[in-house]
Image (cartoon, rainbow, N blue to C red; front, side, top):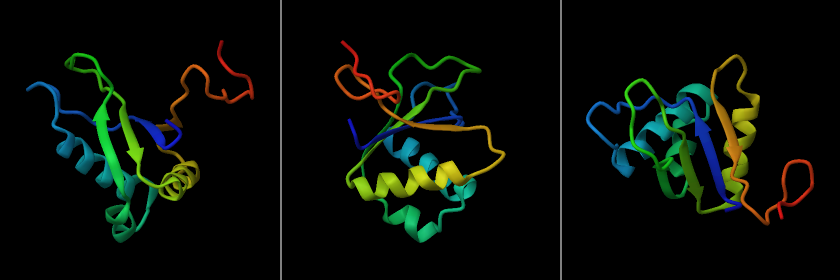
Length: 110
């Protein structure tokens, strides 16, 4: 899970049901290029193992978060730093925290 990032605020057209993983990945790549100003070549070169929406039923008017698993830790850190440097945008990027992994405060879950 350490190579996962969760993105909130990426538009989802959920009136027809769930997006395919390919559509979600394309939206994430476009989002990274447009909002974080990462060069298109760099965004296209990112190795993503899997990109999907959070598991739940699509609801009209509600946008589910996107979970992206990066093949390389270095790619994840590049994106994380670019997102941290993006100012004035209304989106969120965070790593996944699961039981047993260190929490941001340095504590672990029981």
